[in-house]
Image 1 (tube, rainbow, N blue to C red):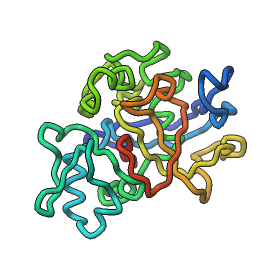
Image 2: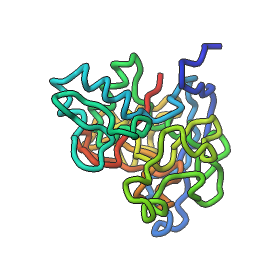
Image 3: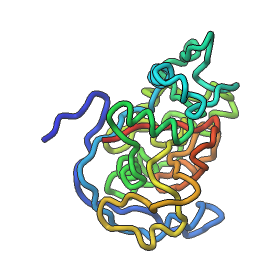
Length: 249
């Protein structure tokens, strides 16, 4: 059995049920989560935590000419740029890097000798094989499990948590913040009907499209976006304050 890389979690090979049945579209979201279909994934590893501001700043300083394509430094960002150098804002070293484009997320993972997870890999790591609604189970979101809109109303931007906070919200495999904190980029292009024709083994997403998939909700969004099956999408070059990521291999 391969040794788990540092701060990564092994996800064993095997099938899982991907997607969900939207019984009430207005309550639960969009029908792009249908149909439920069995997917077989080969073994892989995924980061236990979201990529931190500290680690992403090191990467940006190693690629100063491309940094403007990878992150947008504005208000409510966990990284700052002072005298041409990137660093985490004081006290936010272990918070997730945010306002990161898909290009920045992809480049960081490749720089680390890894890659972004596929959408299917992300979902299995979040929900396991028991078709749970949220990473921690089927209990409705609570501030002890997840950073989401309820906490934002009390704390604002400070609602975002360090990547190793809230252990009660771990997925079945021990992966943190698969719900809330920041939306997470995955490798796949987005297609709303992809599940209707996707491969049954190790799907990689459509060959091309306009936008990329993000998963997991964020610190500003409501509870139903925290579901393990919810699909979001954005242009790969977009910079939004709630965009972050983790790597796989």
